[in-house]
Image (cartoon, rainbow, N blue to C red; front, side, top):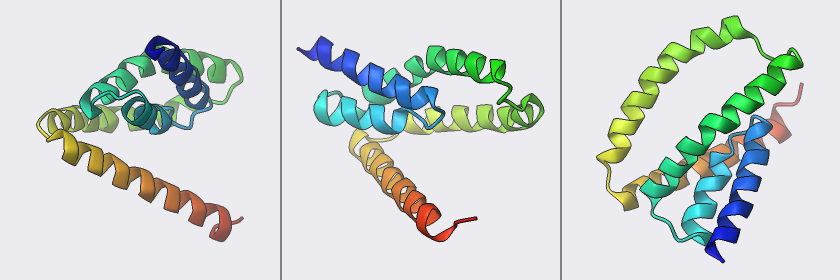
Length: 122
């Protein structure tokens, strides 16, 4: 049964990730809440699944001329530094605190999305 859940979670996360919306924002809660995995394990699974998802999504978006590589390169170097710092911080953070921080992040993201939809119309 757990294997079936993981396959379903992977499909959902891949679909959302392929759209460029960050499948991990959904995959991590699915793995922790419904899958019963630890926060650290869920985050590591999310990161390892992001590699093939990101490559495939990038290829498809690039073929459709939806990628600005010059702007992307400007973002890549600081993102790598942030990823290293984030990985070091997360491995040295208590699991409950890490889950709390992720929950706060998701709430803040949801609030921002609601505000942007209703109050930041162009």
